[in-house]
Amino acid sequence: MPSSCASDSPPPAGVLYVVATPIGHREDITLRALAVLKSASLVAAEDTRKSGELLRHFGIRARLVSYHEHNERERTPQLVSRLLAGETIALVSNAGTPGISDPGFRLVAAAAAAGVRVVPVPGPSAAIAALCASGLPTDAFVFEGFLPKKPGRRRRRLAALAAETRTVILYESPQRLAARAAELLEALGDRPAVLARELTKVHEEFFRGRLSGLLAELERRGEIKGECTLLIGPPEEEPPAGPGPAVREEIRRGLEAGRDPREVVREAALRHGLPRRELYREAVKLKHNRGEPAQGGSSENP
Image (cartoon, rainbow, N blue to C red; front, top):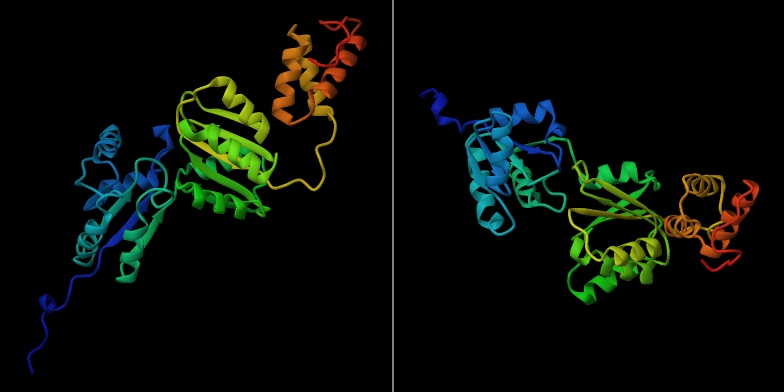
């Protein structure tokens, strides 16, 4: 009976690495991600030009192939075949973690079903970065990604979210953000909300307040730019209390800086979802304690 040769056995399957890449600041990439990208047989990228720039920045020469929402159906079996032939593939998206509102799910599922080892290389994610700096509850949260584009499906999804008691994380384009904020306010009520814009980039910004305040701020600005992550806190068991020590301190600092009390009150009301009339009374009281007349007389309707 002839002995079997090594060539009669199929080659060992390769490995699919799911590699997170920076969402803005390039130095957020991990040492492990760089090592994997450098050693991979192939890098499957959502946008080969954008990923190519990242690789060149770190001096990495790699074979790139496109893998995006328009070709993932046909490209997935091709990549799985290469994995089964023993190649190592690194999957990357334009930014952040593949599969999180980005292409990747189909390839991961198909590779796992074929018995290929799938290895996560964790790193940046806009959803988690926004959540940890939001100031909203982090013990339980739900990631919704982008809400459905079709109005009927979106209304049904918003109706379901109205019963949600966890922090909700959404992605939205800046052009549609004001309209979404208005829909969320109507469907969920005036909950605490945080807008995280351009995370880890030069113009990184957080707006912390309530949905009504966020909507007012977006309407005031008229236009914003950049990638946006929107977080909505759980419903409160009791209506918001009056101005606490933190709010009073915020007003006091604004007054001591010589700012117009009306402007200080307007910003505090938007940020904390409190009535302007109540905050203006607090501003008048602080002015009085400092021995200064409040600008605009005793009006309580700033």
